[in-house]
Image (cartoon, rainbow, N blue to C red; front, side, top):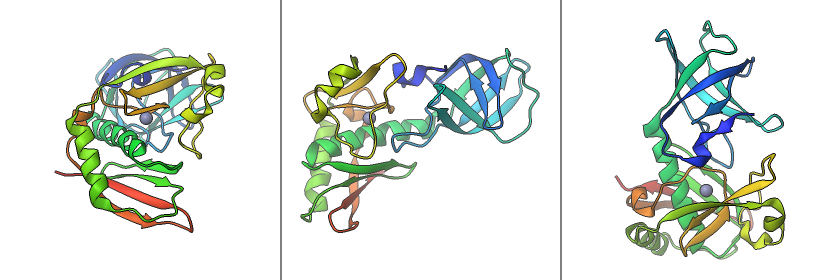
Length: 235
Ligand SMILES: [Zn+2]
């Protein structure tokens, strides 16, 4: 099992870790600040630094859900061994954009009264698809999102049990992504105070002012009953 430090504190930019396995898929460590691909958010990239100063590019992070381990993908061969202590350093600029976009999608979710069918977060844009028949306008959504950013809504996290979540199915907004349950039978609730509350395993900013100004770039009709809302940073 890899201890997921990024779920405890998404602002951690690096950590020491011990290599627990070397596989064809990547390097497994006992703990990591790297977020693994999932829930529509890309896997983190960055560097693995050895004690003798080698700096290896980590080009992706994946998770093996069965063993609860993180794989750090390294494309260049390197002399590493199980038991080695290494430093894992995030490409923080890239990750921070994901945190801002991801939090922005929570705000978007709070504004639209429809089930979410899918979502995706890229470096330069993020989107949510809603099961929504009626057309909607970009401008009022852009305005409402920026109002929530300006209000600087604080985010907090708490853990509930799977049974508690099953008793409140209305908390789950995304039809296509099941909330990330873990081996301990607990699940993390992400609460943007009074605005959005849902189980989520992604990385978020501490309060919405950090998202910065945003703009709905496009709303596309995808299929009979699906609206795709694409958001970009206004920079
Ligand atoms: Zn989230």
